Amino acid sequence: MDREELTDLIRKGPILVRMNDGHEYQIEGPEFATVSDISAAVLYRASDGKFRHIHLPLVTMSGVELLNTDA
Image (cartoon, rainbow, N blue to C red; front, side):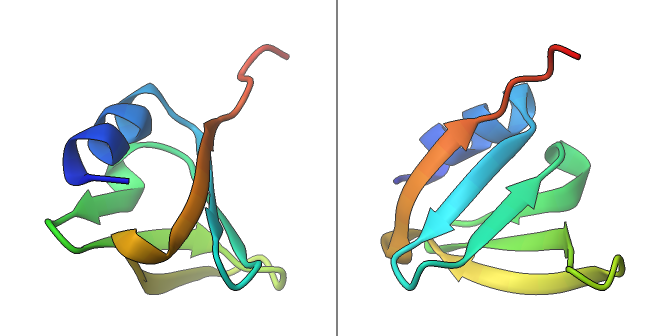
């Protein structure tokens, strides 16, 4: 994953990011992430319902998918 690809997907969002350690993070839209050349600073909703902050290295992302927004 590179910066341009991830930024484009975030703009189209929401997206689901899978990390190579098995963790998954849902990014709702561009206001919830900032992407640099090596990582993404992300606000995500944790299992307790609170927003948390994490840095996700781009090289450890195993998959990114655009989530269906059709209700």
